[in-house]
Length: 158
Picture 1 (tube, rainbow, N blue to C red):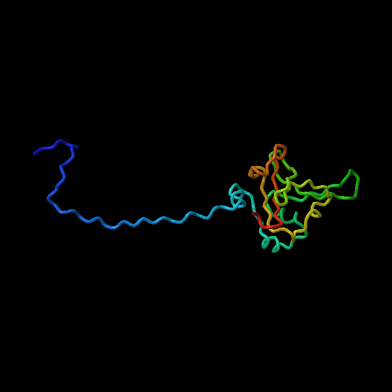
Picture 2 (cartoon, helix red, strand yellow):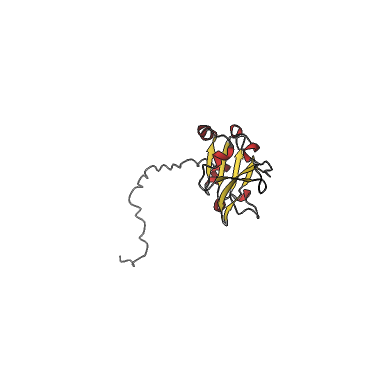
């Protein structure tokens, strides 16, 4: 009996059914969800843990931030001709050197101290994250801040 090409052959019912080998399906467990810090760091930036901060033995928290590329500590007179100096952080931003925003435990700081190191002792820091202008996390970016951001955590981040 001739069949056309592509036509289905009739089933052979004269042969006994053949057993199907056991198929075992395994799946890997879901990966651990990222922490908020890990999600932010996936954009870029650098995180310093309490152990890394302690290993540097910093005189102040700005010394830790300065470990990141492009971050420097600027010293300038409080007023022209004054011997009293202002010390603050500076970063490379989209328009050259700029002053980064500083957040402590998710709260933006308006630093009024002449020496920013007086704001917080380095020994009180649990971790610090430093982000440049191009990789600032969305939740810490603002319309008037085209510079980077320094995130300081004094307790483990929730």
